[in-house]
Length: 561
Image (cartoon, rainbow, N blue to C red; front, side, top):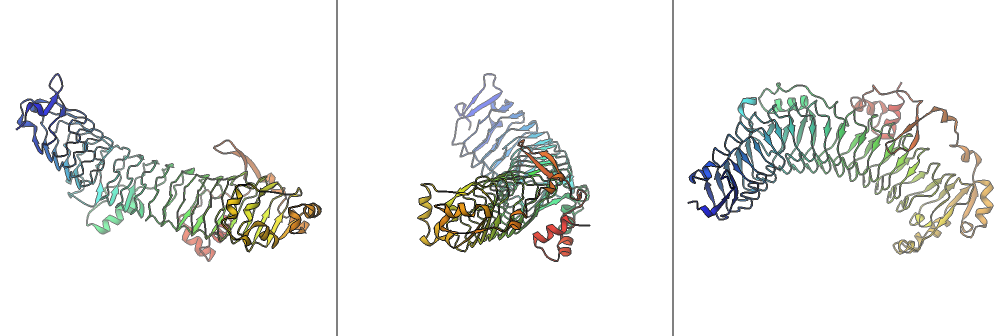
């Protein structure tokens, strides 16, 4: 029996403001003469009614406020009347026992977080009246759409024009999904933490994938065009999916920050051809991603884009790339070789830090900015040549590179940390092109670095075992120096000194400007490959090169007749 003290109404008696009886388990609001006449259930009216297991709402209700049933953790079933036009934000948030719900035909909108963390929800019937969908969990498909009532593959009615932020966030039972053809944007966090999602079909009208759209979808292994998705489903189910049209990735112009972060089952992905940049943390911690091709349209790889991609071995980078951001490839422990294109003008801090399998890397001649620690702890790196323009060696740039046998420093370099040479036990050759004596700096904080290693790995011992080549005219000044005079200083061959210093190619440059307003140059003497489809020819390219070695494949690709 319902008592008058169990609830509070608005002054006009049309809105249920608050349900006060938190011990109520079953409630049929039609049993009370006043409740059966209300037109609205106010925001948070039943919020945290932990004992409530079922409720029948009067047909007179046309509006249910935000968070009306939030945290009703025992709620199993609810009947929504047909007069309701909108499921408001967070209406059933954290209703962890809610297993099924029927949304009536008149509903046109499902707002953000309406079913957030409804972990037991296995069935929702979605009417074709829905135009805006910001939050749904696993769906029971209306029979009128494709001729059957339920499936592990989810297809939302084509009437839906928009799927809002975080619509399916935390839907841990969702395994496959086809996005309606009318959708133009996959918004922020739409499928975040859908840990069972294995495949997704993306339509031609989608131009943007938002921040963290698929983050932590740890089972996601395949991203299909709708055509491919239909063929796969046709082979699994004896159903005609041909009503969905042939769709491609060609219109995607932006993939947001962290969009595929921690998709630990994702092995490969096709970078859309209209994108200009790979955003921050886009593929961070995609631990199964083994190879990726950065196409010509990409000019920036932002910070953390591939950080922690521990299976990444092959990296083909576009010749038009201009910037590699902070920690872009940090801890890619399987990455063996990287060829950085000559148009790259900025490499951010920690860019290749901890790439323990990296044996060789080529830096462009005209880099205008190199960050701190970019090669720190690259324990397999055997040699490195630093480009002209560097005045002061970035902090910790080669610390922990214990396999280095040779280092070449540019003419422009004026100073570097002495502690950088710690632990380089097999270093045997150093080339210093600077005519001005290179300053080795020491800091009181370096004492802590010395404490971490054996005395045999101290810089003085390392440098004493090296042959250090300097310009012939600078040999005497080095030998007379209190610091450099302790080591084996030798004159450098003039032909080696002049080998890479020619400016004859400068006429082949055209001035460009990057997104940060920094001026740099762009090679203009290469063949135009804008119409060459690298993706479609990847297997052929490997065959033509006779190897899947990325360096050889790069050379073959950019020198095609």
